[in-house]
Amino acid sequence: MEGIDSSTQKRIIGYICGILAGVSYGTNPLFAKPLLDSGVPVLVMLFFRYGISAILLGIWMLFRKEQIRVKGHELILLAILGLLFGCSSLSLFYSYSYISSGLATTLVYLYPVFVALIMVFLRCYPNWQTWLSIIATFGGILLLSRPSAGVEIQIPGIILATLSALSYAFFLVIVNRSKRIRHISEHTLTFYALLTGAIFFASIRLFQGGSIFEGVNSAADWGNLLGLAIIPTMISMLTLAISSRYIGPTKTSVLGVFEPITAILIGTFLFSEPITLKMSIGIAICVAAVVFIIAHPTSNSGPQANYLSNQ
Image 1: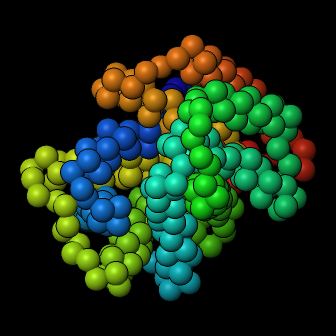
Image 2 (image 1 turned 180 degrees about the horizontal axis):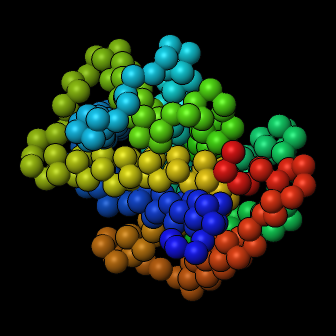
């Protein structure tokens, strides 16, 4: 990017990675739906999703001779990040047993609000453009959720989906704000988060007493597990970490609006799920909000200037 200063380059990369993170994570239904239909339990699916990702990323890092070893105090924080990301996935998948996927998607997209509130608690205040984008994207998500008439809303599902959003928000904030892991590369951070998640899911599954291979019976199942591990997991987490560090957790979370948009488009074009005028309006609102926040970068002056910039 000749002729562009370093801070502008990082901001551009941050926006691109934020969009890629949302789009890649939104491909979850493309691989998860066939696996669920095949009878693969959630814990088994998540174990292979995180485990395969960790192995592939670890091999790639060894091939490139990247640093994998970390200090003990760093490892503890990286493990916490892995648990947060893993809990977000686990809560979301289990919430589908109680509430519709549309409502769950709406509640999970509370995480930009949670990020902003956490940052306010840390005395870092979003500008008015960011708050406006958060409100607009959440309104668009409400339209995208298209709740069905007569569907009973069960409290456990509400709690699980909200916990998923809260876990995701804490993950973003810690990645952006922690000085302890600031020097650690996004690849190393992602590797340990994935490894922790895999161990977490395997431990729960073994405690339950079920087989770790239950439901995985065909080449198609393994292909879907591999796709789930690479696109909505490894790629999503890598781009998420880069984006959060370069443009801050709040803007990264707003760009996550591409996650439900991608999921809805996949459902419409690949699984023949209907798309309504209300959903189309919701997509338009979300895209407009994202364009607005990209067009109004945070000023680099003032006491809270570094809140939405690389720290």
